[in-house]
Amino acid sequence: MKVQASSLRKGAVVDMDNKLYVVLSAENIHPGKGTPVTQLNMRRISDGVKVSERYRTTEVVERATVDQREYTFLYKDGDEYHFTNPADFDQVTARDDIIGELGVYLADGMAVTLSTHEGIPIALELPNRVVLEVMETEPVVKGQTASGSYKPAMLSNGLRTMVPTYITPGTRIVVQTEDGSYYERAKD
Image (cartoon, rainbow, N blue to C red; front, side):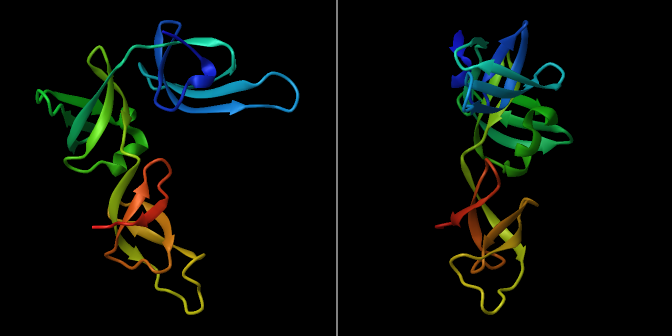
């Protein structure tokens, strides 16, 4: 299916020269003078090579047909991640180079969207936010205001992020999976 380059977003799969590429980032650039362009950073699915392409926003690219389904994360074994389809309990294994840095957010039983092409996993979409526990953080310094100050914290998955000063170790927080930033205190 042909689509305009400017409509592509992160996670989309395109077919260029009979090779599949997954979009890692897409940025629409509107210079003051000249034609607007779309900058696509992509990874070739077959061998993991990263490429960067620039298209005029009106150019069309071939979007590959992929099967997107809900899967449940089971476990990680070495550099492979195992998922199951909750509808028919079929299991799928994805390599570490497909999952990438998103692997730190995966937890047992987490529902994710896995894109497959001819039965082979090619891309993973996580929920927008996950709940993690703060394992350690610095104590509050007297005189810091609670509204505008942040301090570093280590989370249960090994990720470091900045949290408000009132957050203490043991607190469960909501983290955005897109950039690993603090969103809010968990409501559970």
